[in-house]
Amino acid sequence: MINGINDELILAARLLLTALFLIFGWRKLRDFSGTVNQMVQLGVPMPALAADTEALLVRSAIEALAMAAKAGQVVSGFSKVEGVLALRQAKALIHASDGAADGIRKLDAIARQKTGNGDESREIPLATALTSEQLDLALGRSNVIHAAVLAGPASKTFLSRSHVLVRYRMADDDKTEGHVAKNTVENSPIQTVRTRTTQQD
Image 1: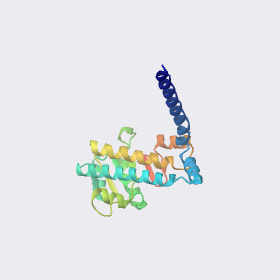
Image 2: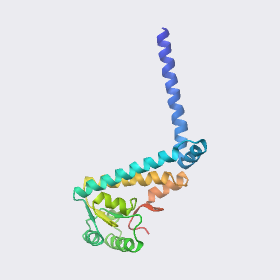
Image 3: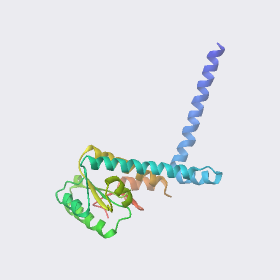
Image 4: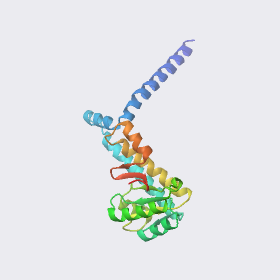
């Protein structure tokens, strides 16, 4: 009898702790930047944890892009990217976040031409979450600024992981939840980490 009561009390205590974690944890997730500032004031190494998390997400995106390249689902270099855009084979454009604006504008313009006439189904996503050095690492060559992913499961995995990285960086930005959600839905530029369609400027 006593054991039964103890089990019920332990279960109730666990449920209460779970509820408390959900309530207070959700508040902190909704205000990630505020949580980081609070941790700094308390001397908790939260920024280091955030940096480590971002590094893992970057590594995950790099590895996914490398796998897509091995599967033949990635082309790189201005001319090759221009070629797949002309053939409407590109499923997404990749620009290095530190790439020159001139080349980016030219390829974006070509993409807009190929996805014109109101054909929304042909809008091409644009990912600029990785630097040139990180693209070099993923594709095994130097000075990669522009790339395009072709159809295939490996390329979908890369785009998915890139989106997760962008969302994480957005959560660390000083924006309200509503503004972040609006930018996510509209795929608007977010500083140097962007996910948008080529029909938007």
